[in-house]
Length: 104
Image (cartoon, rainbow, N blue to C red; front, side):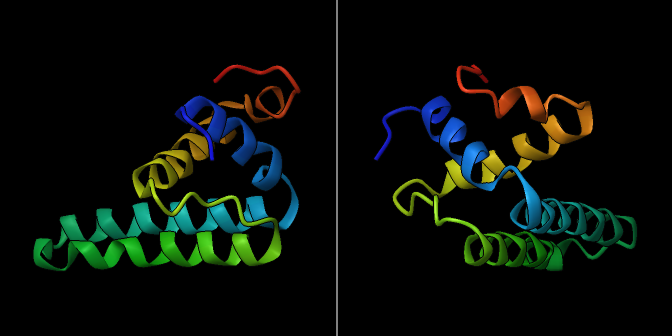
């Protein structure tokens, strides 16, 4: 078990930041954000927690395809890592984050 989020995220990116697990993570995160935006647009705020479903499914599929790097004692780290992974991918810095001594 890791003691800091930066250590957790470094291991998370090395295990899940490539190939099919990466596609599953990004697809789930993007689908959740789009679903949340649609729900807010149409005033379905009560159903907003349902928008987390694609995010969770993407993470489960990625865990099944790759190595299981989930820290079940810190679910907030898992959620934070999903959004940080998406941000690094969108900004084009994911390859640097996979480098052996990257600090993110």
